[in-house]
Amino acid sequence: MKSKLELSARLAETLFEYRNGTVLIHGLSVEDIAARHGTPFYLYDSDVFVRQYQRLRRVLPEAIDIYYSIKANPHPKVISIFVGQGAGCEIASGGEYARARSAGAAPERIVFAGPAKGREELEYVVSHGIGEIHLESFEEMETLERLAQQCNTTVDVSIRINPSAALGGGLLMGGQPTAFGFEEETLREVTQAVNNCTHLKLRGIHLYTGTQILDANSLLTHWQHAVVVGKQFADLVGAPVQTLDLGGGLGIPYFAHEQELDLDALANGARTLIDSAQADPKLASCRFMVEPGRFLTGPAGIYVARVRSVKACRGTTFVVLDGGMNHHLAASGNLGQVVRRDYPIVNLSRSNTADPTTVVIVGPLCTPIDTLGRKVTLSRPHPGDLIGILQSGAYGLTASPLNFLSHPTPAEVLVRDGTCDGITRRGVAFG
Ligand SMILES: Cc1ncc(COP(=O)(O)O)c(C=O)c1O
Image (cartoon, rainbow, N blue to C red):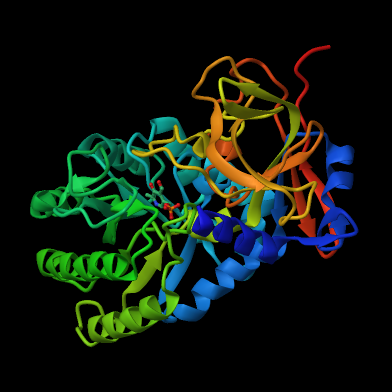
C-alpha cells in the first residue's frame, strides 16, 4: 500500500502543485478548469508529451526513427505535438490517416499497419500518399496490388511478421496464435509472393510483440530478434533491408509493483545493437523505426471526475463519480488486462497528505464492472471533490464505450504555456 501511495504521490508531484488549498497545473487551478469545461474531462499537459518524446529521442541512436502510434491518443492536437518534435505517425485505419494529415504529418512520414485494412481505406491512403503499408495477409496483398495497378502507381510495403517467440509484455500480439501479421516461419513464402507483385515495392519488415513492456532487456531481446529476421529477409530478397520496424510497446508504471522502464539500459543496449547491425551490409543503410504510443502519451493525461456521493455499504466505503468506464475503460481494468489493478488515483481537491482513507471508487454505470479503484488510499473524498486518475493520456477516451448509458462524452483540455485550450467539447446527452 505504501508503494502505491508513493507512486501516485511521485507522479502527482511532477504534474501538480498544491497551493492555498487548490491543485494547480502550470499555475492554473484544476477546479477553475473543471468549472469552465464541466466534469468529467481529460486534462493533458503538453510539456509532458514533449518531455516523453525528448527522453526517448535522447536515448535512441540517431538511426532509429520514432513514429508515434496514434491509436494511443488520436487527437490531432496531440498528434501535432509529436509531429512538431519530428516524429512520423503509425496509423491503423483510414480515419487515423485523416487525423494524422490534419495534424500536419507529411504523407511520406506515415506507415499503415492493421490486420483488416479495407479496399476503400487503402485506396484513400494510396491516392493521398503514404510512406509505407505494412502487409498483414495475402488478401490484403492482392487487394493492394490490384489497386496500385489501377492507379498506375507503385506502393512501398513492408511485411508484418508475427515473431515465433513472445517476449514479456502486458498484452501480447506475437509469438502466439493471433491475427496480426504473417507467421515468421512463412517469411520465405510471403517474401516471394510480394516480390511477384509488380506494383508493390518491398522494403523490409515490421515486428510488434506486445504492449506495456517495462523491462529494457525484454525490449532489447525483441529488437535483437528483429535484426536477425531482418538479415534473413535480406538473404531472401537478395538485397539490403531498407525498413526495419521494431514495434512499440514501451511501458509506463501504473501499479505499485511497477518500475519505470530503465532508459539508460535501453540506451546502452540499443547503441550496441544498432552499431553491430550497421556493420553488416544487409542492414548498413537500413532505416530502423520504433512506434510507441503509451510511453509518449500516457504520463501526460489525467482523467478528472467529480464525486457525486460517498456511501457506506456493508463495511465498504464507495466513492461514486460522475464518470467511469464509459470514458476510461482501461482504468476499470476491462481493456484486456489479465489482472485488474488500480491506476494511480489522487484527490485533486485536498492536499495529498490530508486525512488518508481507503475506499472503492466507482463510476455512474449500472454495472459492478464500472469500478475505477478497488482499494484506493487517498485524502478522504467528500461530495463535490475532484478525483484525478493519473497515467491516463494513452488508451483513455479513444478506447472507451462512450455511448453506454448515454452520459455526456467528456471534454479534452490541453494545458500549454500557462493557458488551457478546450480541444474537444463536452458532449450533450439530452436536451
Ligand atoms: C502495430 C502496433 N504498433 C504500435 C502500437 C502501440 O503500442 P504501445 O502503445 O504499447 O507502444 C500498437 C498497439 O496496439 C500496435 O498494434
